[in-house]
Image (cartoon, rainbow, N blue to C red; front, side, top):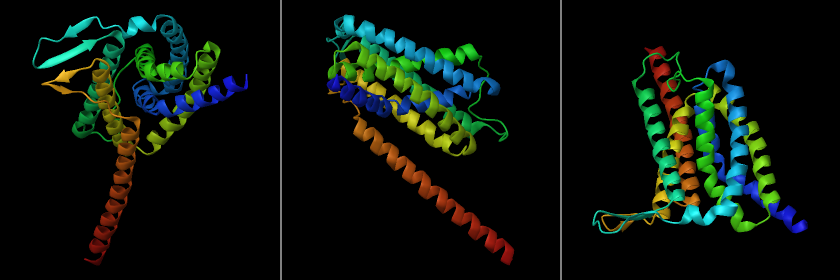
Length: 258
């Protein structure tokens, strides 16, 4: 029992670390729903995603070999080689979709003219937003579930960690959304982090499929590299913000002197 409890604590920490990118996506995606329903969308989306994660956990525990068995091969092509399985295709699809979403929202930010309107806001129904949150949550959960299965084979320990992780995500999603709402300049930072998440998932999916392009193997981006890039982006954003404030103060001072 003590060993199971220690494993449970480790899995909760793992859920928290691996869930950062998922949390950012939920916060940004939920803002596309009607404002009065955004809190409901986050709670319902994460709640349903937790249920689907437990179902996915049960399926992976019993059918993991089928998810890892290649069914689509490219070996006689000099430009592309690979052995695709269900796992790799799901991860690749998630990476491409997130990359496309981040690029689309960044384009909206640089092209919109009315600063009173949220540039990332689009007309989506509550059900559409919840479906997107649940779908991407399940895609994000593959790595965390497979990592959990590598640590333990006790189903209740893994399921409990998923439930506790979901509760923490519901609480943190509200905090992150409030922060982004009050500090809209950080939405740009968040979207570029989401962009990197898409690249990370694509490289991970390519690695799972043993994908080679023009003879060069796709190497997955490690979590260490991912968090290092995030730290650099945050540092750049802080330095640029402070430098911009100094420039504005200097310009105001010069205008008053004139």
